[in-house]
Each structure stands twice: as structure tokens, then as C-alpha cells.
Image 1 (cartoon, rainbow, N blue to C red):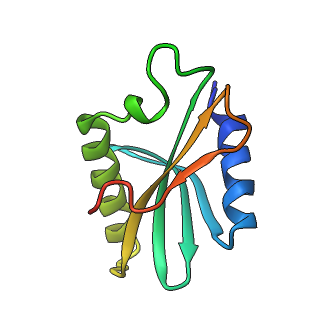
Image 2: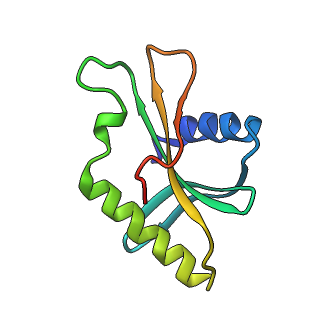
Image 3: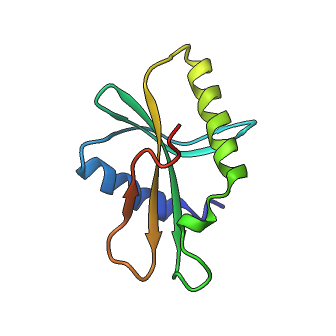
Length: 112
């Protein structure tokens, strides 16, 4: 069961309203999963969606560990290699905290 489905749908709609084109959802490979893959102009954007009901035990941003970042980067490399596509890319994060009405979008979150 994909508990992230509604959060990912909300994040995708949010990003599309801001001009990104969603290319893929829930890309899975042996390295992990990428929630959303989008295009922003010539740039390929790999997006992690994190949702939390509240900030009580740390918000959504705190749930993205160094190990999670490594898995996302490895999965993105797999995606690019499988398509023999090498172009500018970045990693964004969309945070959905239940106590905030609007998603928080962090572009180039990993600085990779």
C-alpha cells in the first residue's frame, strides 16, 4: 500500500501550478524510489515528497536522512543511465506538514 499517494498527488498538482511538468511518479529501481520526476525548462528535477501530521516530533524536512539522500541520488543515476540521458538535474523536496496549509517547496535541496 502506498501511503504517500495522496501527498504525492497534492505535491504534483502544486508543482504543476508552478510550471513544472511531471514526467514520472514513483520511479522504482534496486537503489530506491523517487516520488516524482519533473522537468523545469531544460532541467530534470527529482523530487522527494515528505508528509507529517505535525512538527511535534520533527517536521518533514528532518525525516530526510543522509542515507535517504544517497539512495535518491543512486536512483536518479539509475534513471539517467537507463535512458542514456545526461543533462542538468537537481533534487527538490516538497514538505507537507499537517499544521501548515501550503506545501513547502525546497528547490535544489541537496545542492548536488
